[in-house]
Length: 243
Image 1 (cartoon, rainbow, N blue to C red):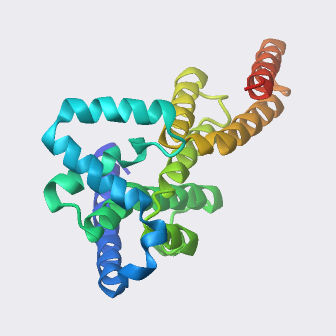
Image 2 (image 1 turned 90 degrees about the vertical axis):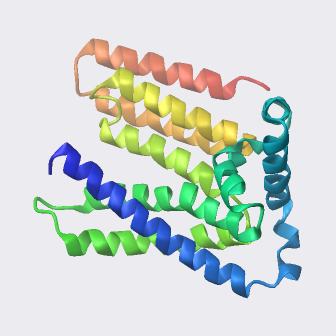
């Protein structure tokens, strides 16, 4: 498959999946009883407040966002990609849920489906196999349970999955180690920025990556083994640093 055809395929797959996801969100919101979601309304309320502030005063919104990222455990950064939905479709419950599905849930499902398919695929590709993996990833209940309640936790899953994908694609940094390392670092940083509590899975991914990189390097030349050992030691020191 050529690069243009591949981009076209993924763009089409994303659009179709997003439309299906938005339709499911519309159905759920239409049947939802408001009395049941108030325990999960914190981010929905913040979505409305942030969108209103953005329209009224963009500079004040940026200042508030910077403060939220610096001080809040549950920062407003996770809602920034959802602001276009607020501007275009308003601050309704459906706008918020649909935005979370389109921006976070669908890319996460496609990414997990992609990793699973490539890991399990044999020499020949199969449309039926990809369809099966896509259905399993898209309809994974834990993704939808939190998202439909109004919790955007799936955003952290997307960032962490992207980091794992770049690690896996580079064969644990044995191919294109510099650019792949930068990609992994950006994804892990993004997960932490979206919510501070994602620091724990970020640490887990970092330690696991150092471990597997070390195992990959031990069968290569001495400089590679030395660099892997130094990298692993740095990861351990960073993780063990007292806060």
